[in-house]
Image (cartoon, rainbow, N blue to C red; front, side, top):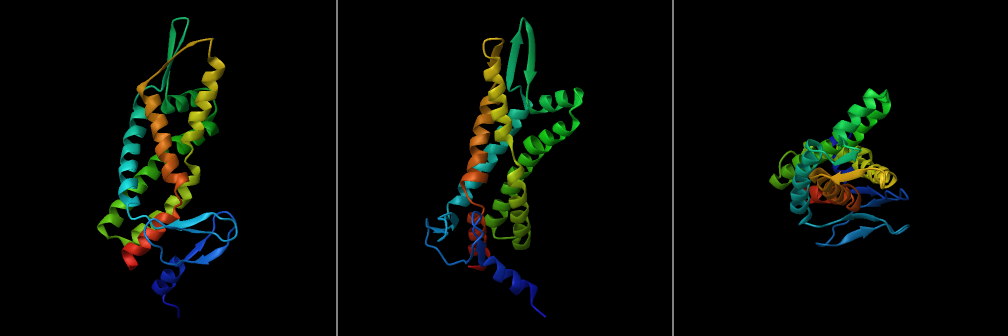
Amino acid sequence: MEDPIKEEAELDQLVICPKCNTLYQKVPLPSGKCALCTQCGTILYRYDPSYLDRALSLAITGLILFVVANLFPLIRIDLLGNEQHMNIVESIRQLIENGYYIVAIGVLFMALIIPGMVLANYIVLIVLMRLGIGEALTRELLVLLSHLMPWSMVDIFLVSILVALVKLTGEVQIHFGVSFWALILYVGIDTYLTKARRIGTLWELRQRIYHG
């Protein structure tokens, strides 16, 4: 009977190209270097020891910005003296009041719940890795993170707001709140953490931390 711990360790040594699905055996990398797919040139993983500290500071900053973006109005629209405030929570409420329940649920999860879970996941994961504890838990958190990241769509929500504002330009007075700028900064951090950097970076650092 196969030893599950040994089997898991062997699987951790494998990496699949996210673009062409080519399977590779991991090899040790010097600091600052990355491994590329020989078929399509996609970055498979990299070894960047400073990434954990950088990612932790960005995740904490992103969480603060995300809370600010949801506590205060993103924009204030003034139409003939009638003012309306808007943020993610208010948008969900408006969708529910107008009967768009499925859309409201989608916005609730993809623009509010899942992004918050991704940030919390990052913070807990990196703290555990920095302390060198919770090896099994970090593996589960990395798997969960890989499933959550594609569903974090605050950037799409922001783009939809900008498109709507362009259409309203000239018809109403638009005032941007502090939450709007907080949301833009958060989207930049989220893009770096979930899209610009491959999750393989975290897997590589985990392998080095717990298995040398």
